[in-house]
Image (cartoon, rainbow over all chains, first blue to last red; front, side):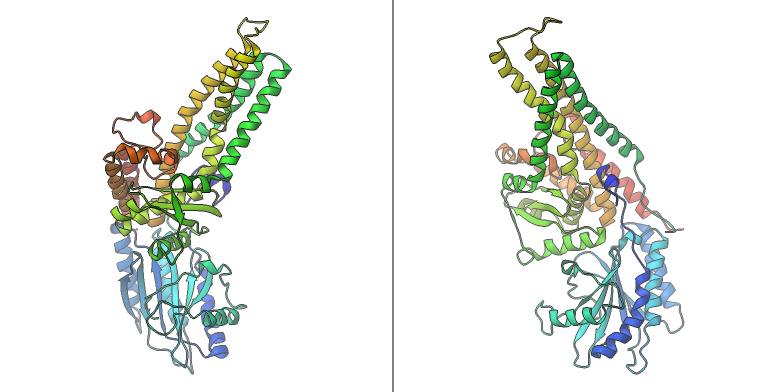
Length: 197
Length: 308
């Protein structure tokens, strides 16, 4: 948003940046080679459901589009405490020998483009792709649509709301050359209770 | 982008630009008017000097706006540990809007209100009262926060302080000219027989009055702008509308004693912090509830329109 637009009070909603998601399959391979983290095969898109019929029909269309495909993933739609909607795409677990999450990324992209095509691009908050390590640790790779950057979110084992910062830093360093990573650590939103983590 | 549900309000932008232009013009009128009234090169010097001091004061107010407003509202900054829900909400809104996260403050008063201030989006603070936290649902609170974040994004503190510099200068001149009356002893100007201090007083009083009115108009337009941007950010205009209805009703019902405490920061609040349902719309810093709700209803209609 330009300075003039802000001074004149005519700011426009920020549009989402969708393309960076296609870098995820390659990054997943890097991550598996470097630290044994394998994608779980799930993924989710978090967005703000707009009030009114327009959004409800758009969301229903997206769900039926995904469910109608061959080898259709299981789709679930949930609301979190902050009033955001999580659309979870649940594929079968990835085979560590033949990891391929291209299909998952295509599905997530279908959600994004459908929302954007109906004018709801500004509603997209983030996308989450969970990974699991051989020791059972979980890390989510989070994509911020508006910033166009990725960051890792790793809840520490146990019930408390603690983050495993060392693991997060490791993942960031391993992905440094592959994906645009969020440099501002204050933007690394904690997503407690996100689906798949 | 295939399809956008964002509908700009050209009329609002045009009216706002016009008012800002008039305020700038007023500043020039003030300097030139003083110069012409005094009728000498000393007059131009005086006008420019007082003008610079006026702008300086406005800049000082703007630079310290966060501290001053926080003090006036007796607010304190809260950390993410103290108020996790509030911070989580603002985190998400800032990620949606792609703007830097402001500091968060809470004022311990039962008056339901919220305000945002600070010299730039990087150095701003969003503050809510415990009264508003207690009264609003999470959805409504989010609508209010989005409205305040839009004030930050629109740099409203900067705009309003610059806009008020003509008024500040005129006020200073009006006071100064009265001293001039004592010291100058009513020395007369040769051309038209009026004392110089009286010319200065009249010009600056007129400028002050006009700038006061223009500022109020500008403030109302800025509020409408923030409402629009906030509604498009949360995509839920209804929550903001119901929050406004709750807050306005409550504020009118609150005893005067509390209200006087908060009147200083009134122009930056979500709803005007003074009592009285018959306050003249002309002098109000905020648009009427009906006007605000009507705008939100239009946005709601656009967002809810079935897809193609």
